Amino acid sequence: MRLLRLAQRSPSWCNTQPWEVVVTSGPATDRFREAIRAQASTGSGQAPDFPWPERYDGVYQERRRESGWQLYEAVGVRRGDRAASAAQAARNFELFGAPHVAIVTTDAVQGVYGAVDSGIYVGAFLLAAESMGIGAIAQAALAGYGPLIREHLGIPDDRKVLLGISFGFPDRDHPANSYRTTRADLGEVVRWVE
Image (cartoon, rainbow, N blue to C red):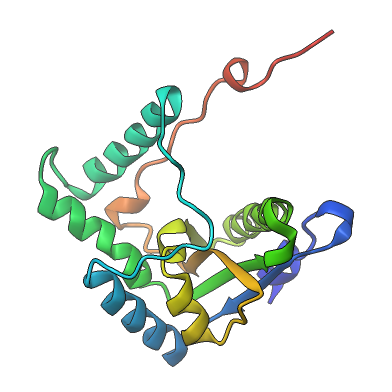
């Protein structure tokens, strides 16, 4: 509960707090994991509430690739090994073995502003988890199955599924937990005007 209380302190446009979060535990997590894994394994049925990015260009593509290759190297996936990379991607739908998943939704009517505010909530959730020694991973991959998630968890149609966050106490010895992504230098992302 402390984690959720800390995340709840997130700022939002006009204090609207458009996020609603469904958290699974125990058998509910197992049922959800099985349902989304089964759907994802068919290779069909993706219907995200928010469109995926059209593409990643330039530095965004470079950063994305760097992060992916860092993960693959950490877990022993060799370049070009499509089967191993697909197996690693499928771990998303196993919730990486986590005991809980938080499905973050936003009010559909608030559009992009609700999504941005809910994104701030996600950032606060992740930072709060880290400060408490809890492992948490935001997973846009889960949001590809918005209709399944809504039906399985009883989420009304006036809510848009933003993403899922799998969380629990991490296995610090797991290879996936051995690397950290890099961050751009401030000069690349901040421009001062005087």
